Image (spheres, rainbow, N blue to C red):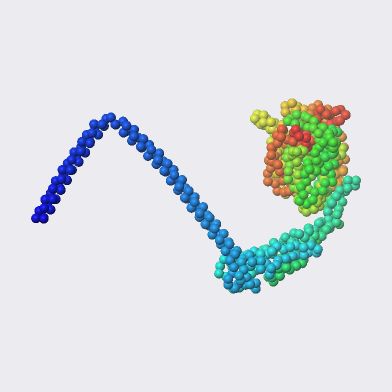
Length: 593
């Protein structure tokens, strides 16, 4: 009975549930109809709401993304800083540990007990036990040797305080040969003194003689023995040793008596000037400034540095020169004749030229290609004394000639001579139409001719030089001047000794006097022939006289000619008869040689 009742109860519950479900479905349907009926009136508002919601969601997502990126970057940066801080902290910790940690076990270094000491305390204890005060003494002077063991002590303490130490340690004092040699060399440089050969030391203008000084012995510290003594003291732990340096006497190679016998005039060159008194005054003053100059071994001679600025206060006068193809007047015109004459004398002596530049136009007092232009603030002529003894320079002007000689112990070997040889290899004035219109006049090849006992042993090319032609206005006058001086074309007179030099000057004066009357009328009719130098192409030469400065010099750029120029037509008078070898040198706005 109870089972039947239970079944009936379940049946009634199911029926009631179905009835309720039917009502729920109905109500949902009715509600749906209600919404459907209002669908058209709410459609637009619904769409706008959805669009606004989408935009908000996108903006919010972007903000979240930016924040996330920033957070990630911050985390990475903090991680890096944390890592660096941790590394630095660890290093500091290690250093602090090494510095402050006291040795707990018994440890001795060279008999010094450092048990219970920090590293700094141990270092101080060892410094007190082994103080460094080693010195080297020579005569009354003292050299303090650098502490050679401090680095070894530091390395040993680093080892002790960074590991579990042993009970006993000794300093490693081996392998110090290089350090000891450096100390010996440093001490030797304090006292070494080179021997001085007997040599010229000054010049007496009144007697026109170079004066000699006696030879002086030198001193050379025995560095090998000194290094051995330093090592021995270190090995013996004699760190406060006082070591006496030993020295050897270095005798000079040339005594004063020998120098007097060996010195002679090793080269002499003479060039002809003009009859222009103003230009000759400039040549004389420049030669006087150079005369008596002594150049020590390894020293470089500078023409501008020796002669100085050419000014009216010094007596220099205006003389004719070419500037941009025109004849102008410049203070000091003509001094390039002195530098060019010197250049040739230097080559003959075997000395080494280090700076030399050609003129813009062909010179007439030396063979084109063998000139050396100078100008204050511009081109300079320089050579170096590549010999082992001092050399002296004699320079003078006399009777329309300029002579420069080198006084020295012979630099070249016995029977060896050398000189410049210049040959014209191109004449642009007779070339093609394009060459004639190029503004160039000629190209010269310069060789160093070396002879042994009169026989040519080499003729190496030193350089080539290209000269420019004159302006049209000056061509006719220059041609007339050149034609007048053909027979008396300027040459370099080479004299081997002082006596032959004087004879040559006398002979030159006589020859020049004979040709003056023949050339006077032609030269006065126009400006003199131009002086040269445009492009200098330097080639590898064999010896000490290799010429440098391979730059091209234009008329506007040439700073040398203002003091090199010889007679200009504007300043030539009937009273000042022009030489048969007129000389003109180029100039730039700056006065120079």
